[in-house]
Image (cartoon, helix red, strand yellow):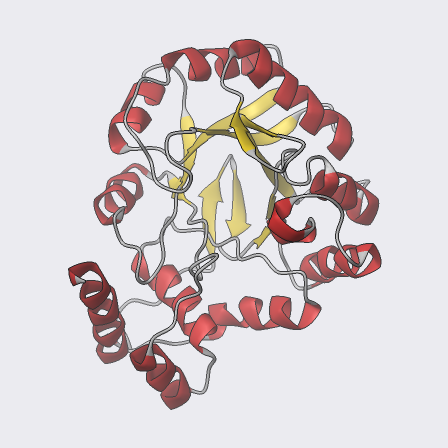
Length: 293
């Protein structure tokens, strides 16, 4: 067995949460736009997630827009006291489904109020500022104006905790000079390893790192080496990819998304995968090989 067995919980936003949560993005329609094909099924997935022990859900009012938050409210409101809802602001959707930056202070305030209204809340647990540099990769640039606006909403009692999404290490440092940052949500997975140094930097500070697209996103992770490892330990490739993240660093929280109860159950079982040092070395090699190419 590996010398390091990951803890099942992490101190996040003032409470202890399970390290495997749920991402609600896929509850909207194709392209994260419009309603789902089956709203009843979407409600069922959320309720099953809670039944399986999920105690933090990642969402945003620009998913749909408004769709996922309204489904979360339908499925789970009134919310359990131990449920942490994390949302994002900083973008809006065009009528053509385009992702449009919404980074001005008045747009940030509107985003917070939209989330409050559609989730049926008086205060948001955690709000991540989505930095609209590139679509899925961070780009440098000052975020002082945006973070200051969000911190003002926190002072007004509308937001408890603040995080960043699509951020660089420099931007995290800039934000921390303005307000406490409790999490960073960037693209990161077994083969997308650009944030290795940032993961470790945040771990040393006890700040949560929440990878979006933990399974590759629109281009799912596919590797014959990964499939072979998964077969050897009796798991699916995606379960192994999620388990690797849990072993990667103690501050990593997972929010894999799905619109299927079956896939949800598979994702949750990733926390039970035991990875030996030898297997972890083989998985790390997959990431290095991908980076090299």
